[in-house]
Length: 228
Image 1 (cartoon, one colour):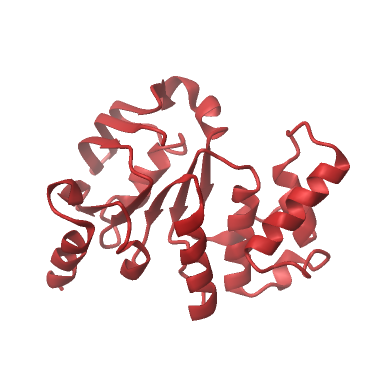
Image 2 (cartoon, rainbow, N blue to C red):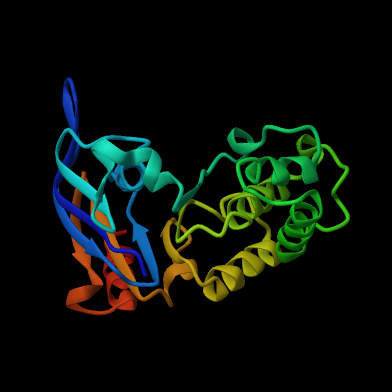
């Protein structure tokens, strides 16, 4: 698994601290990041592929510093946004997946095969020629997932990946996340999605307040739930 390391990493705005200085070393296969809205989850995730840069400290992936070599890291880290529409760029479902492969040295036939495999993996085969904007909210989220997995990144960061999904599609995503060989860092309010994760980290007010390294993922989740 990749090694993601935060060393005194913080993010500040002119009048507030979004993420206080944070030290973390993440090496596990499936990691859940939980916490209330405004806890710093999304900021922590965006630091991992340089969408946000640390105000102090440093963030590295396999020793590569995001502050200086973010483009290199992004080749290995896929990011799934909570708003799937922000990732849709092409007029058809198949073209949207193929767009992810535009920089890959693959033949047309190889690209077509990869696209079909990616769509089948999320249950969107048969939608190849459909406009992505006509998909349901849940189907758009599955398309965004396929557009990332088709690249076979070493690490996938997923920000609220089940927000718009019905039960059937949510269970499909959960199975995929369990079976994918890539390291997964999942930010979610869907606590069942990460209850069987290898590690769960809880944030509050821009700080890590609980971590299953000292207990277990289930205990971290239960302590978080007990606050409410």
